[in-house]
Amino acid sequence: MSQLLSLPADAHALRDVLREALEREVLADIPITRAMQLRIVAWTGDSLSMAAPLAANVNDKGCAFGGSLASVLTLAGWALVRLAVERAGLGCDIYVQDSTIRYLLPVWNDFTATARLDSEDRFDDFFNVLRTRGKARITVRCAIPAPDGSVATALTARFVALVRSDPSPRSVDTAQSAAATEA
Image 1 (cartoon, helix red, strand yellow):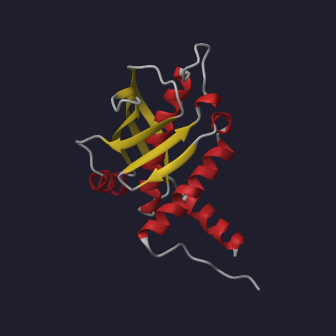
Image 2 (cartoon, one colour; image 1 turned 90 degrees about the vertical axis):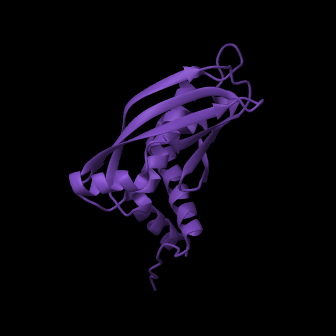
């Protein structure tokens, strides 16, 4: 007998389900992320942290490869916006419109990129525009810290969300399917 399972009612459990489903989707659909061994290690709703081991992202000098740092930062920002859109129940495609990266210090160990909205942006404003116009932009700031707490690498990126004609969020569908399969 098939059993229909719904997403968890509590906000923390819902965040975990959405985060885990997005990590599976990213690893399945973006081949480089498997080679980089990326993991979404935390998502609070306001911030998202994505980690990668140095060994899979090392350059010829023994520190983290700049392209890997840029990829992790960009994906952390994208994932923050994507998960917020899904939690709001909106089916959107998210694109990076433009970005600026600063490499301030070499990264000599496993690293974690943390993404947060720019201080001038709010998800509520973003969602209002998105629901009204079918598209919206939001700026995210991402950083990889150095061991001393300073910033080793920083990215500022503007992301664009476009409402899909099929409004169902893919990760929510994936999360529901995974929950049904596990039952």
